[in-house]
Picture 1 (spheres, rainbow, N blue to C red):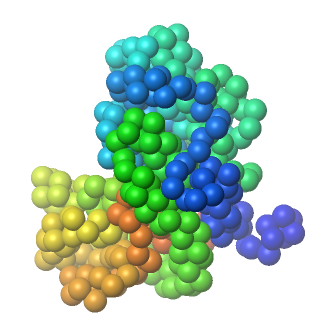
Picture 2 (picture 1 turned 180 degrees about the vertical axis):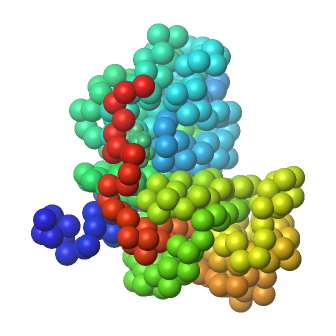
Amino acid sequence: VTAEKAGFDHFMLKEIHEQPKAYRDTMLGRISDDGKSVELKEIGMTTEQIRGISRIHIVACGTAFHAGLVGKTVIESLARIPVETDVASEYRYRSPIITPDTLVIVVSQSGETADTLAALREAKRNGARVLAITNVVGSSVARDADDVITTWAGPEIAVASTKGYSSQLIAFYLLGLYLAQERGTVEEAKVAEIVAAMNKLPDQVESILEQANVFKGVAESMSKHDNLFFIGRGLDFAVAQEGSLKLKEISYIHSEAYAAGELKHGTLALIEDGVPVIALVTQEDLYEKTLSNIKEVKARGAHVLGVANAGYEGEVMKSVDEVFSIPRTLPLLTPALSVVPLQLLSYYASLARGNDVDKPRNLAKSVTVE
Ligand code: G6P
């Protein structure tokens, strides 16, 4: 069994460490040799069809849904198509407006989640084209979709998804760029800039992983609490939601992810002495706003761990108790880095609580009932 885990104590830790490879493999063959364009040969839509898309629905469950939240921002900012996101178990029952020029993107690591599959079929019945992002070639979702982008993350065994999620982010970056190229909403130089930054992500994740031990201590003190918060704005809020889910799934510590600016509309009442708050501060255009939200929780006694971009840690440290810095990348790409420290925190918090990291209670890797 140790051999299967390649020397790691748990599948989850192994899979966290496989992310640089998952990123490289998911990008492989999908970027032109000159680095100036994205090539998604697996997408059968013509340029005309892509130009005709009037709206996109991203539908998924759990962690895959959280990847979709990032996907929304990526697609809207690059390809300028309006995107809605839904959890699959809600989608079918809210009579969504699905037209033939709607593209429905379903995201599923396993490709077997019953709710996601049912949503896919409903979308097709209504005449939408369906594109799937999945990690399993030949899965039910892959078979039923019109177009499939495979995330080449390799088998994911731990119930809590790590490389599954982050490779879905890479798929969304590629897809966002591809749609933008076809619709002419992005300059070639911009594509080249994003692609160049994407190519650096695997090594940047590696450099975060080299500091994995840093999180043990923080996670141990976190594990003594029953309640904590993740806050962030914009893409940081999307990642905060994934960080919160990861922690709940395997450590059983209750946490809530909050859009940092929304705290004062209620949740701030729950911040009291010593409550841990994990604050993501990677979106530079929202930097000052997030810092002022951090001050609001600090003033109520919260113990704040900041996740900030390298170069900003000194400044952020003035407002937080501890700071972890992630390597610099483009704002759009930061989720592919900032999620890694959150995965490690969850892992070590689960360990500190003596839980079964890879097989948390009450959860299944793939839920094939609705
Ligand atoms: C289950 C797992 C989650 C996962 C979700 C969606 O609930 O416990 O970790 O995110 O299913 O799985 P999928 O395979 O569709 O991405």
